[in-house]
Length: 240
Image (cartoon, rainbow, N blue to C red):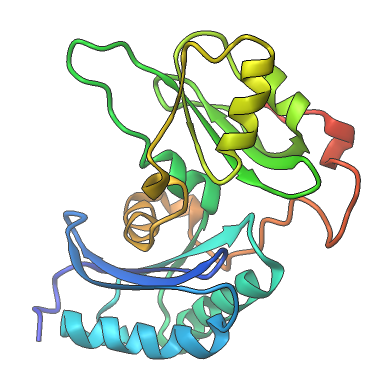
């Protein structure tokens, strides 16, 4: 068993089309992880997967320093599964919990520029259906510019800053098309599709470094009610 003084953080995500779990150490190194693509069945898959990952890491729940869990945006059923599990473990084993948005978990995976290349703003867009996207924008230094919101494609394209941009997420293709229609595609790079969804290891890393004021019972980040037709805030973008 690992020494009691070590730090281990469990991160998991059931918000989208996968069930995934990871354990990282105090340095952010991945000790063990698992991921299974799925659109349904998160409730049946999550607890056994957590058990398997903890066993592979050779630790128990009592060895965890924190738990990180995605809070959305994502599927309503999937979010409930992850949040319920996190709250249950947190209460039963007195483990601090950190909620991490899926948009935040993707934003931190945006590729770093080469040493001689300029920085790029980051635009994270998840397909929200009905020609809408869940949107978050960070400036080239990673500072939040547009807070998580749900807007139509045109509003999202209008919000994309001028200059060099990295575009990621399942809504990236639609948003790239809208930017091309505005003749703004020359400075936009759609990053590799492997980076379009949150990763459990980054959920754990974000929970590891989160300030204490982010620790507490997580609440779901619902940007709109089920089957809503109108964008949140009438299409207005909440800025940081």
